[in-house]
Length: 87
Ligand SMILES: [Zn+2]
Image 1 (cartoon, rainbow, N blue to C red):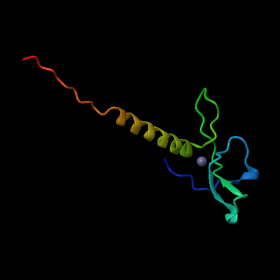
Image 2 (tube, helix red, strand yellow; image 1 turned 30 degrees about the horizontal axis):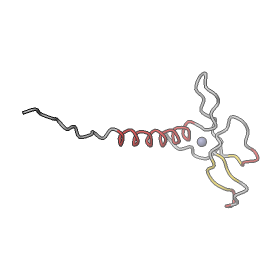
Image 3 (cartoon, helix red, strand yellow; image 1 turned 180 degrees about the vertical axis):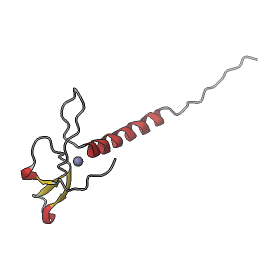
Image 4 (cartoon, rainbow, N blue to C red; image 1 turned 90 degrees about the vertical axis):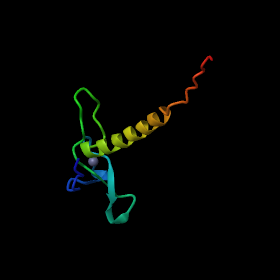
């Protein structure tokens, strides 16, 4: 997934529904004047409108998926099985 080029970036005050809310920077480094990504949000049929474009949606979900995968793996450490043999 290609990162948005930032051409659609919007200032926080200009942000409207349907634009990605991911903060990508600040105007003149001013924290009160945040730039948001502004790309059209990602929408799946029958799902609630997301707050993120495809790129940022994917980024967040990839991170979450990786974390849960790591958790699963650590839970799957094989346990030692002691075999009791009867002589
Ligand atoms: Zn975005």
